[in-house]
Image 1 (tube, rainbow, N blue to C red):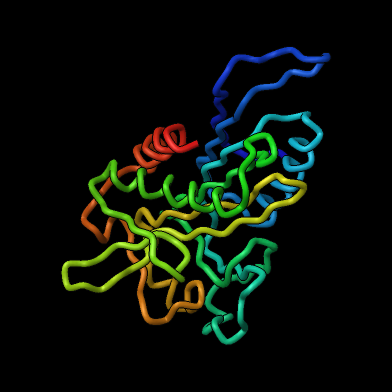
Image 2: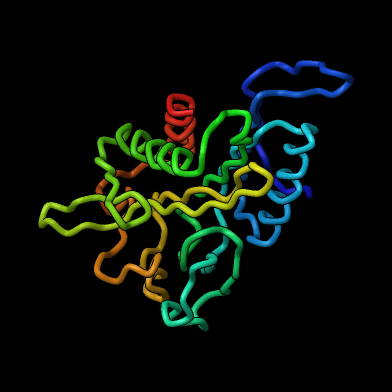
Length: 229
């Protein structure tokens, strides 16, 4: 599926194997917000191509128009205002979350079998990817037992989520991924109980006083990804 305004780079040169051009990993950056259904359809097609070894692994950095997504564990009661924004049911793990401009979504499509990695290790690596990305902006992101995502401890001791994680695996291939709050409209989170956690709030790099451009965030994400994966 074609998506407008893409920037694509490849980690290695092409290798010709049995008449098929393969590369280790593709990086894709979409400059315009990508409709959610279009992104999911694109990922599903790519999963099939990776499984068939007809395409390389993919890391796709993008934004979505304002919307809510409900994962496989989403509870209807956690959707507080279904009229506020479009709502999409999705096959990723997790509960309700918000996507919108100012939030960098990273969809990661890799073959776990080739890496001899299990799901728990993969999620841990996604967390580490986000933690190392935030560290590049002098923000301390932390894991919390029993709470999915990456958290920031405020000066008054409150803990707010700065990044969410939701994954799906098909035929050993991962898709969906992470969402890092750079400078989104945080008021949109009021329409849901994010990830089913109502005792804590959400934050962003901007709210932490870190004013950076999306290309700067992308550069940090790529450097951290290469270090972790």
